[in-house]
Image 1: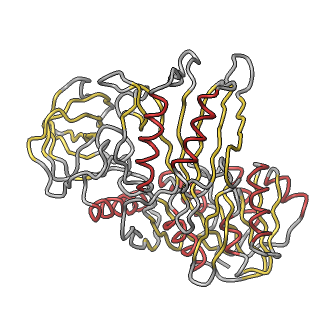
Image 2 (image 1 turned 30 degrees about the horizontal axis):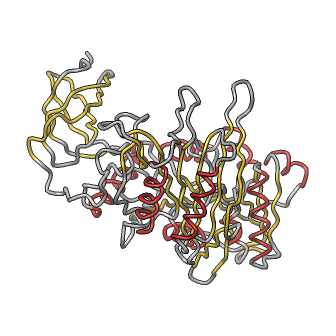
Image 3 (image 1 turned 180 degrees about the vertical axis):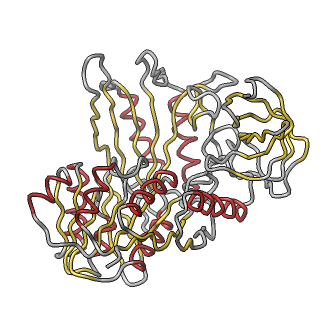
Length: 459
């Protein structure tokens, strides 16, 4: 028997699940229900209301706190609990790490994946860690006034104003305030996704953490030349000399045609330079405005160092689905040759440029379908294959490809614990052994984490 939608319950929260919801057990007769409560933490006693129900599982929202957990702390961001950006912010950071570690252990053990699970690598300072933030123009849920901020947790079409954001850089707050005040005085309105009206979409800020470079991207929709926008960039440049690069991104949406992204360089440098520092290696990266780069620079360095520490040097390493090739570039210090393969042309161009800038001559990048390139090039058996797939994980075709390559070592970097665990089961069924897993907390105050795993092929 399912619990009913709208049903009110008293829940004593004892754990956190992978979605960051507090978990309570509800016993009714011989049945035990798992109740996942959004916004509740272990130690909380809450009255909640069910909004989703399955056979022995339900999701609920807090109506009233009857007792607060001792592990709750005061928030640092003014949007905490209203926006969905930092759902764990009011849980003490050491406890966030405890529960994330426990979830990794639980999921892997439930699938009988026997391996060493290292302690999660957290951050010494879990604030101002992001090198990229995107703030959206829109309408406040309560006041219906023009604003600039983050999407509302409950009403995704509404925006929560941001005056104090402690995730990216203190300069973000000044840029948000400046941009909001500027466009409030104009007749330009936020973009409406429902009827493709309006102009103002997003303000994206990309700040290097190991250099002084700072990039701003103003995102508009269906823009045609307007002096108000040009004057914004002029005022921005005069007011904030710290901004080293600025762009206008025009997203053209027309019914019946493919959406176009038109990027215009407004002032400053064309790229943002970021340097990554590992134990024995420092590399420079030129980051294009729309290119992917790990959003947490410090923990990216941790991830790449963890990968290097896991592998045994050899002749050939393949970095499959390599993106901009960051992992492969670092691996070039341990292997005679590294080959990166990626489908996205712009990412490959960035990878080649970064290899050239860092004077790395033993790495090659190929653009195209991984399967076709591997079949056409006929590389020797690799000593190592590295994969860093999207959140959905590796497809059956990709898993078969890796098994056919028969590398002695396989390193799997994942941003989705569940898809990784499913792939890990499939790899072990195909003869690989999961040696160890290292969780990394790349996004403090959220439910997300990264895992780095090593597989070996028994002789």
